[in-house]
Amino acid sequence: MAGVLTAAAREGRGEGPGGNGTAGRWRDAAGRWRSLRPGPYAVTATLFFALVTVLAWRNPVISDFGQHASAIERIKADPLHPANPLVDLPGDGSPYYSPLIVALGLLARATGLAGREVLRGWGAVNAAVLAAGVAAFARTLSRRRWTPVAALAAMMLLWGVRPAAWSGFLNPGALTRNLTFPSTFAFGLTLLTWALTARAARARRGFGTHAAIGVLTALILLIHPITSIGAAAGIAALVAGWQHRWDRAALARWAVTVTVAVAVAVLWPYYDVFALAGDTTVDKFHKQLYGRRLLTWYGLGVVGLPALAARWRRHRLDPLVLLFAADVAIAAYGWFSGRYTYGRIFGLLLVPPQFALAVEVTARRPWRTRRTVTAWVAGAAAGVGLVVQLGSIVPLPPLQHLVTWPEYGWAARHIRPGEVVLSNDYRATHVLPAYGAFLVSGAWPDPSLPVAVRNRRAHDVRVYFSRHASAGVQHLVAARYHARWALLDRGQPVPSGGRTVAVSPVTGERLVRLAVPPGR
Image (cartoon, rainbow, N blue to C red; front, side):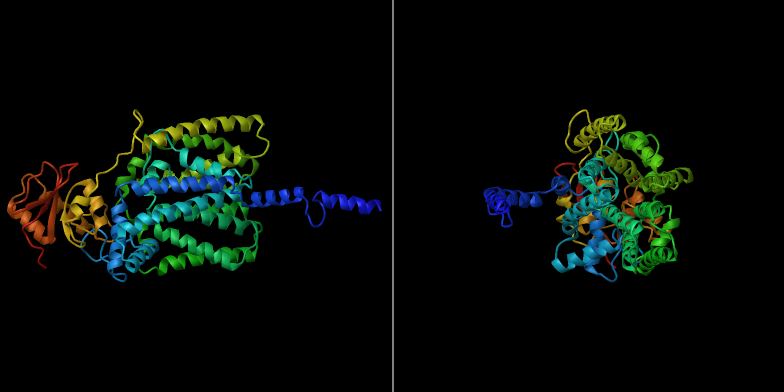
């Protein structure tokens, strides 16, 4: 009898099998709410996604956006045999035609959208892939729910005391410019690939998983080759540090990964990615990644080194430590060999200290003196980084603000896609290809063009805009390259027979229609 009364009493309080009491219903509702309530990273990532997507969307065409948008436009016009993205020549072998650009070009062809419109919209996808990659990789390092939040904050803020904007750099100021770029997609894909690699190394996975890692690695290689070097270093570090057991089966699985990666890269029909290994064309442009900028651009990242050192003391083959050592070696090789393009690895080089610090400050027992000091130092560095990055986006004297370029829609309205423009202006040669225009000499040298061709074109542009160029020489250059237009700075004289059709209300630049027809 007592047992029956006790059970009845529990049921009346909502504790019985039916849970019909008021307290039981409240507990059920609370449980359902907790299951639906977003975690801290979901909230943080959503805010990050909204902020960078809006900032990037509002930014005018800038930097390398024009070249990527132009490549999309060329695929849209002819998917199988696209023209060179920048000059009016065949595009066979151009490294701009990566799987991502080809896919976006086909999307533009299917929707009828312009290449620049597709590329702008793709920024949202890049932001989502990047946020997902941060969460996936951080969760392979720690199960603490705040670790991905700390990792995203570290990756955004722990750079330097001056804003660094370069393709492959992922601080907020840089993302306002390069969120839409293939390099950002490759970076996010790298983090996802590392997360998958970590799972495959820690627990025996099938050949399908290892083949998937190979495909992802090949995609990164084809989309952004310099990022793929860091991605491969990360894969090697994770396997060396976390491979559960080495036996014939494990060796066979990783052999599949390498084989698939090489096969996919070799079979890509648009260009030979391995031919870029010996190309030194753009090394001179990348020297500025080194020197005095090492501290001003990347200095705040050093606050993560103690966390890396702690991981090394606990495990000599810790993957983050191995990855950091490999990236430092790659950057050093770039400096001492004069192959400064390898300095692009700095974006990935900062990831190990950034993520190691995120794991450290979110670990259990935060009252330990070492972790308390680490948290305070990290917080101070993040505060400096926040001020720097805020100043890079919003003009806040005396902080350095990343310059916003003028827009060239005023000129593009008159230039039809596929027409050739003569210009020696740095910004115009970067931007005008976004509207489908061809240049005589590209802003960046394309390795698919022979050196002699690139040099002759650059020389002819210099001759055309020389103070001493005669009308006959200018007519000859314009006719040689079938140029219909010239874009002139404020002080440059109008070529003989040319007619000014538009003037920039901001810079005073003029678009001139040339008298020489583009006869072929």
